[in-house]
Length: 417
Image (cartoon, rainbow, N blue to C red; front, side, top):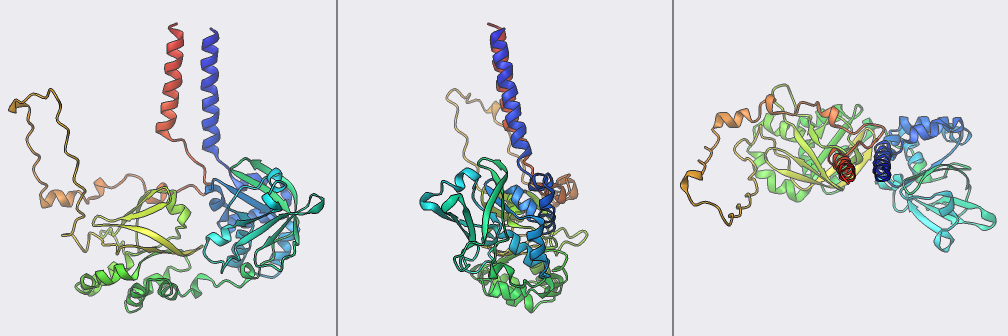
């Protein structure tokens, strides 16, 4: 009986730990318990920083109260500038109240979400944290004049070593973060691409009618995957052989009519429509990720995201190492699958020819067409496959089932004793 109680206690502990994993952290809910941070909380949601914070597994949020937020908003910044300012208040490391007073050599430099966006010039996206005399801990942007205008006040909530939400006395002053940020309609996306290794693609886009489609989607949300110059240069002969409409579709195939941050791409797998998608013409590809690497898989080839040029709601531009080729334009160039490993011969396998199976006939063109039919597409809408804005981590079915099976097996084993 005592053994049974032990097994049941172990099962309860496993289930509780899994429940904790599934809920993760939610910055919106944490701050909602504290009315003095209501404005800060509201703008974390409005700027889409909240889901980005929730997706991170190690993070520190430097919360500022409503009065400090009023000082920021009193300068009438655009929502994009507000996002930069608040991004500077999100550290990409864990600093609980205890750790703040145990910093090695009394000072530390932490990267922020502002630095991670790529919008911060030089080291302006770093924050200096210094344990000062009298128990004070000061915070200052790296591009500041060295003075500490903001100090640690209290710990709001800590989940070691996952998330720490602490209150600081004032907003962090930063000329880089507070600089006017152009709205999406003012963004020169081809200029950004040209300056960062995608000049051939940008020049080709500018010379095509496809540029209008990209521009029209700037305000509502746009994600661009631009092939690097070497990749596009090697592809140019094939591009020139396309019809005029085919060239437009090929370029539009590299754009998605919604904003997809890198964190969103890393947390979701599935089919995604493009600017070229039009009724029967699917022109879609599959986003796949493995840890930090994100790949885009068409029915012809697979490209890898190699860098981020801009990741600011509502526009994101990434570099990729290959040109994306849609099957609609390159039907005769299906991707060559990797050869399957030869099956090992069983030691006692019978040699009778009666046990040999007939080889499966090669698929006919009709079968090939059926493979691209809607019936073979995933049942879920691509939007349903995206990560939840709250960033909650769901149960891992295999891991959860395995643990439960282990507990049940242990219980049965003890019950038979």
